[in-house]
Length: 245
Image (cartoon, rainbow, N blue to C red; front, side):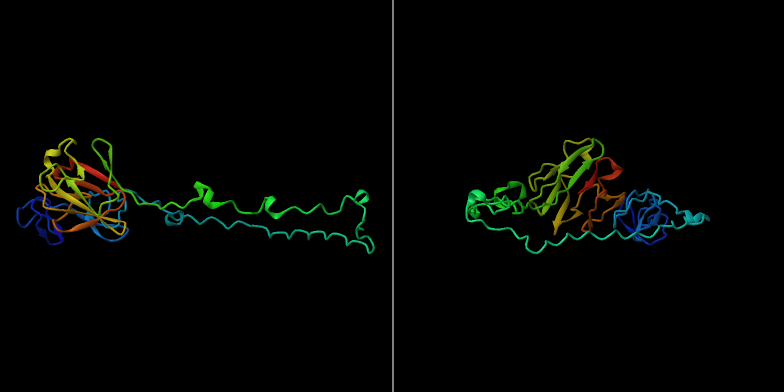
C-alpha cells in the first residue's frame, strides 16, 4: 500500500495519484537489503536503516577480469629443538656445612615470613583499585537537529519521551519551540518509547504529521528507530532530526 502524503489515504500498490484527494503519489522502490517498500527519493530504509544512497562496489570478477592468482606460500620450517641442560654429575651435590661462616654462596637464605614477601605473580587487590571496578553501560540516544546542527540527548530514565512544545496537558521532554519553523510542530506531536533498549516513535495526533525517512507515519503506528533514521515533524522537511545511538 502507498500512503498519500497529503491525506494519509492508503492507496493500492502501483497507484500514480491518491484515490481520495488526487495528489500525485511518490514513486516507490524496494530496499536492496531487506526488500521493504520505500520511496524512490528516500535516503534510508525505514525497516532496516540501510543507506539507500550508497552504491556497493562491483567486484573484479563481475566485469570479466580474472581473479587474483593464489600466492605461493612456502612451507613453514620447524625450529630446532631446545638444547637440554647437562645433568649434574654424581657426587656434586652441595654440602651443608654446620658452620655458617664457611657455608657456600649457594646455601639457602634465612626463611622470611610469607606475609612480608610481595609475590610478583599475585594479582592486585581489585577492591582497592577503583579503575578495575565494573561499570554498567547504559544505552544512550540522541537527536541531531539538521537545520541548526544541534544535538539533544534523550533522557535515559524515561520509558516514554514526549516531543512537542509547552502545553497544559503533557509537558514535552524534548521541547522544539526554540527551533526555526517550530510553528508547524504540534504542542503534543510525537512520542518515543523505549522497550528493552529499543527505541520506537509514533505520532500521537499531530496536525501536520510525522515523517520517517520522507515517508508519512500513520497515527497509531510506530516505527523502530535505527541509527541514521530521519525524523521530520510536520510537512516540508523543515523541522528535521537524525536519530543517533
